[in-house]
Amino acid sequence: MNALDEAALQAALDREAIHTVLMRYCRGVDRLDRDLIASVYHPDAYDHHGPSNMLGVKYADYLVVRLAELFDASQHRIANLSIDLRGDVAWTESYLHSFMNHADRIDEFVGRYIDRFERRDGEWKIGERWVVADFTRAMPVASRYASEGYFLKGRRDRQDQSYARAG
Amino acid sequence: MDERLELLWARQQIADKLFSYCRACDRLDEELMASLFWPDATAHHGPYRGSAEDFWRGALSFLGRIEAALHYASNVLIRVEGDFAHQEALFTAWHRVAAGPIPGGEVLAESAFSRHDESRAEDAVFCGRYINWFERRDGEWRIKRHICFTEWEYWMPASERSPAMARTLARRDRSDPVYWLPGGPDPLDTENRE
Image (cartoon, rainbow over all chains, first blue to last red):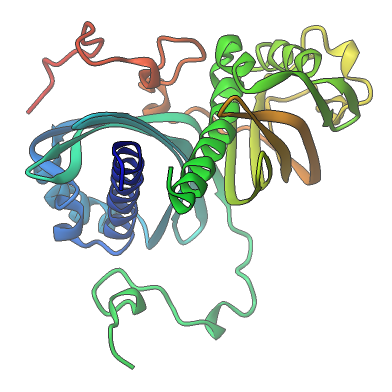
């Protein structure tokens, strides 16, 4: 493999690693998995997350308690992902569309994660995060989808199907 | 370059350009937008047919006259064939429109925005697809043909701004955090850090 190939392959691997970290965070907050959330931050990484502005690893502790109190279920979806790779640092923007389900309404958040990723000891993690809101919206729920009970129900603990690794 | 890596590289370039298109719409970034299209590119966007540049200049001018927008693109499907690539994505585009007429809105007679209920602030949500034909010239991928259409839409009264929204860092120019660079001044008040 020549130098150009090496560089292209490394860039592809870096991007894949960064994408995986972003997905891990989403699963972490939706399943209230403290360790998974904490795993996306370097130890000194700050998360500027609305009114809270704290170390990511501490934020993980706070989040799992707070999210459980605030609503019944959530889904954090990431689509547009732009990555500006600069050696061991990468600046990323990911578009976020999240749903927070309450008994009588669904809160929708439309915004972005702006992250500075850093590679330390070969591992990409968030070095600093800013959460940016472009829109928010609350929608009253008049009725639930009739066949909701028909599907496997998403859980907010490790009993969720995404953790299953056997049969 | 190894053929497999070349393909991977092409796909990344194309996805980057698609997401840059969304960013350019949402941050009203003309310079970024201009870098995405070939000079002879065409656009077929809703009722518009013509040059891509005329299209995007009109689109950015319109977006600048409403309060906010976010163009969310998922299910990105890319097929690369030599110097040609076909890309499809599903989009959800949120537009927040203030109560009252949209400034300069008379040009919108044919567009979906003519359905704005001027008695209230609204969120217009369009769901549809972007289909872009990319062409590679001198190693660079850019859009040669842009096709965009809505498959359905809904209009909803805008929610009150939540307290969290008052603190948002979102901007529609280069002061948005996505343009911050390492080594520059830290635009954040860091006194609140725990």
